[in-house]
Image 1 (tube, rainbow, N blue to C red):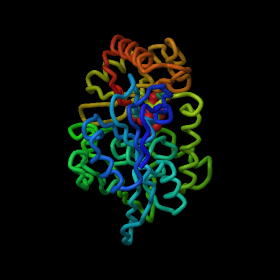
Image 2: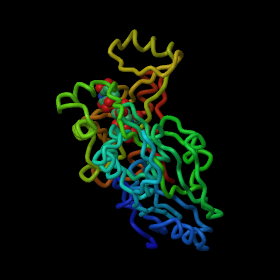
Image 3: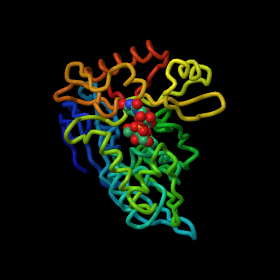
Image 4: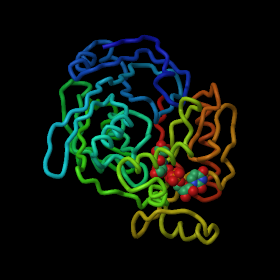
Length: 337
Ligand code: EPU
């Protein structure tokens, strides 16, 4: 266990916000975490479990205890004719796990290549890209209850997964701390390439296999999304909004090119990046906060931005999208007070 007091959160948030936390504690096993949680100063403080901080925004210094997993084991726990079940420590860097699966010819997570963050957070956030969400391959999530320190396993259905949503973000927020995730991976991969022009792009790189899909997705992401080491950001800042079919048809009359995805007989999803670009925000800045010039859904720290500056920009964008399209945008990034 490593405990740092009055510590900088700069290495713990990809937005590059220079906030501080009263305590930052790293633990490397379930037993270590249980010991941490039994300490009086931890019990009497607010806790914030985090991964690499790639999906959050610190609005202020954090008054409380930040808990970071460095449990970094990958183990095969079961195997049958079609699948391999891997238990992956919450501190394993997400993309290292994806690379491991691709190298070992296990299918299921290749479309989620190059997403920043760690494995524990992936199961909290239900990360998704290119037609796949991590919930599609999660078998179970192993946790420790913060208050009692008792271990508890959540089955996939108990996690109540939805688009960028889970029970760990709602009712059980900060109540259970993820220690490892069990994934069910396919020995004979079935590829999901129907997102936009993905299949076409993959075929340009060779035959369809796990490695070409991974390479293609890495190239697409690198062409659109800024590298957090050069330009602070947290990926998509807002969720893609879902609108009624009726609202969508009204918009389509004015904007025949509007991109959209089928959700149900009554609803359509519209890309927030497109809405933001139509409002003229792409590449714009307010103070030290900006809108990325290649993907308008990504807000960036132009250097020395505070959480408040990013939020101010986000609010201006929300107002103009509401005004022009009548659509409310909701942050995907978690605001931490
Ligand atoms: N678009 C624009 N202008 C922009 C950005 C996008 O017109 O500035 C249009 C694109 O042309 C395209 C559509 O919007 O027609 C969708 O764009 P893109 O494929 O880039 O995906 P997205 O909907 O903006 C979502 C996820 C991403 C994920 C990609 C690929 C959310 C909130 N975001 O973005 O996830 O990588 O799809 O599957 O669902 C993240 O969550 O941090 C993230 C990066």
